[in-house]
Length: 104
Image (cartoon, rainbow, N blue to C red; front, side):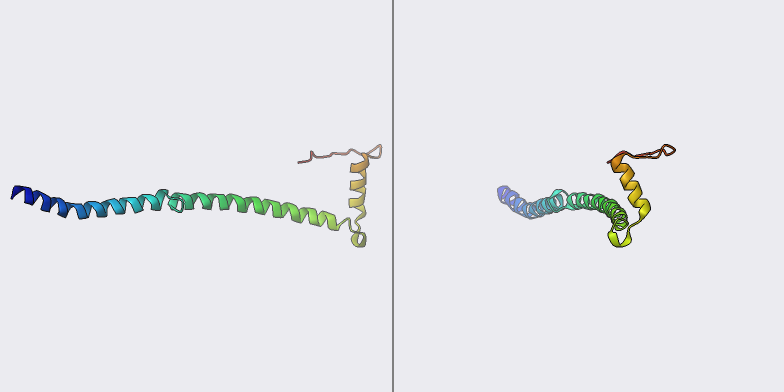
């Protein structure tokens, strides 16, 4: 009967071991898997960086749009026209200094 007791105890221990193995498997993939917590955190970090880039690009676009609007024929700003002319032609009066920032 000793052999029968061992097989009965082995069968009783098998169910909790299989359950623990399944829980471990799913817990590992919940954290490390393609759609796990670490992947979710990494995607959130990428989204945060992309949102910052988007905000910078939108600000730059608004600045460019406002400068372009000053050069339209219906609302021409003579100061803006003079600035652009001097920059393109590298023209200045003898008593003027031109400070041209580096282009990005």
